[in-house]
Image (cartoon, rainbow, N blue to C red):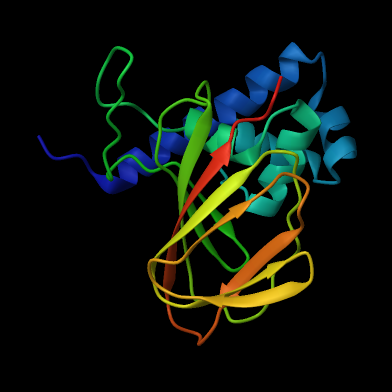
Length: 193
């Protein structure tokens, strides 16, 4: 039986919303309190929790920070594994995705209870997005295309098969070097508890 990609997307959106709700309630927060803490609207957060909206990576970052996790962890929690047991197979047809202002991010592992979380990032936007800075280490491998990467104010051009290790605390951002599509494998360390 072939899965309908739209149904898979709907399930991942529902799982993401359920995870946000679960973490919010575990912290004893109301939707109004979460809205105030994240500077996102109460109706928008309600739509996320009910699986009726998918947040951007920027919005997901604010939600995750407030709830004590990472946006990558929330995305990984929205992915369904195609197998049981310690090894988990994830099919391309069950995406845990979020839009970033300069591309699309997809979780490549189910569940956030791993030491690291691999993600795929694809984008073609040539303008800089905001800086990202977090305490966790990150590894980035260029699967295809050419991008500009800004590491704490130092810009470099990276091409297919180039990679960079970004220690926690280093501000970073990336953009297409030529307006063409680039794809990255991003492996982020799970938040230290």
